Length: 271
Image 1 (spheres, helix red, strand yellow):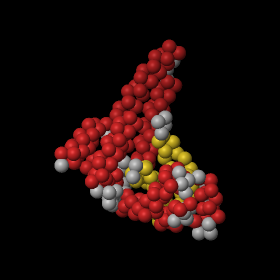
Image 2 (cartoon, helix red, strand yellow; image 1 turned 90 degrees about the horizontal axis):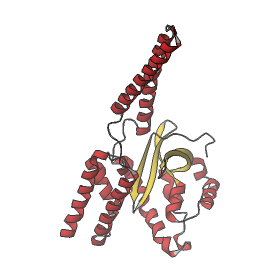
Image 3 (cartoon, one colour; image 1 turned 60 degrees about the vertical axis):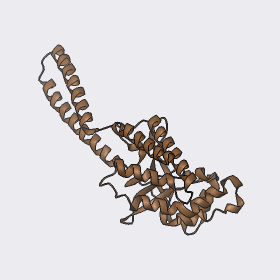
Image 4 (tube, one colour; image 1 turned 120 degrees about the vertical axis):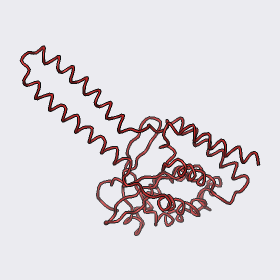
């Protein structure tokens, strides 16, 4: 395993896998881009203890040389933050998964482990192959916008400081400072409005979208259990509304998304 600090991914995507939100990241390794998968969340989904799996990976003569610590963006009900997670290359995911003996676990999670062993690799690979990568990741674009806003504010501050040096009295300086701060507030608001074309849906709205997708997928699975209907529904959402995750759906498109899912559900029930 590399002794370097956690790397920042070029891109991060979340794939719906039978109701689980499995994350994959794209990072630069040795001059080329490679897909890695955080291991601990998969352990949580499968109901297996993380610590023994971490020790098994670090003891393995092959996997221990391939894993990387990657800063993965995690969103919960309170905030969005970056966590350094142990990640395994996607090409080696099945090597680790098949080290989990489905016959030695509880009956209620045996089928989940087998499903991950059979399908998880292909679905994660498809997430990066079928949908083109963005020219820049959302995180990079957001940081560039913040940088440009900071430069604009700094320039305005320098201009105001030069002006203040020429003001003779304290009263005049206070009056001008008040005008300056108000002007900065208006300009920052204007910059933010231009840089933010639309806020994504709220956590509550995202939960409603996910619930609607699950209900539709369960209905379709009852008619045809040979396919992963969760993934096909999300893929259609991403294609139709031009997003890489349902959590990035703009507020303005939320009613259209819910109507689309409801109409799809109605067509199936009607049949």
